[in-house]
Image 1 (cartoon, rainbow, N blue to C red):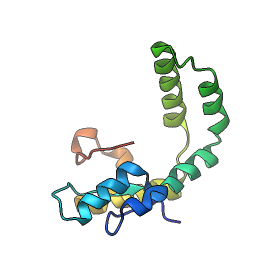
Image 2: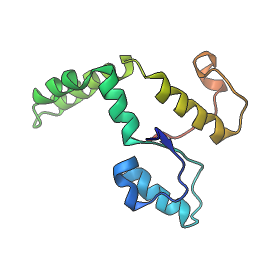
Image 3: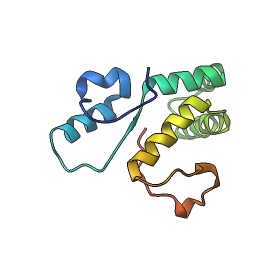
Length: 128
């Protein structure tokens, strides 16, 4: 299965592949609406990342202890989970797929994303 998909021919039928927001965006793109260039990271990429980084149990433990009536509890849990995800090792197959799609998106020469200053990178929008 692919870790990154282009929007061509993606739509509501592909919610299980790319999620609802991406599937709806694919519908707009393929209907000819003026939508910025895009690529979609698949659910498979996320699942593979979570499995390979072995963070699922740690995240579930945090979620289990959330007081959903307390905004501060939700915010703290969100920050803890964010930290776990950011610090987890991204499998090279997924990382390289995303970098390749990013390069194709902006049409730039091959670059090592890790060594480019943030202001030198093309801007993109990221949606969860």
